[in-house]
Length: 99
Image (cartoon, rainbow, N blue to C red; front, side, top):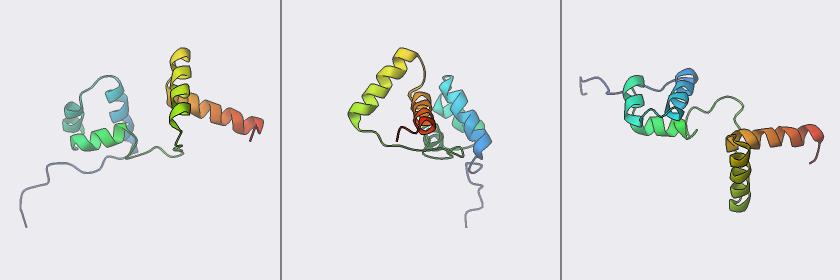
């Protein structure tokens, strides 16, 4: 067994993961975040892309290409993130029982 410690501290919890996302959205480089949180750059990337450490209540929906493009266009016009717009539209539809 190799006596050297592992180069990374381990998996971050949801709280540091949220901080990673916030800092990355603010423009922090992957390498800087990896060093700061003691994780690999690939882990930072996975956290930022919500492939790791999804917040509770996260719902993933696969949209066909046309619908995703339309959602992105509307979000840009409204100056909101596409994910926020999608969430708001889903909640609105569920509350109005459009389904």
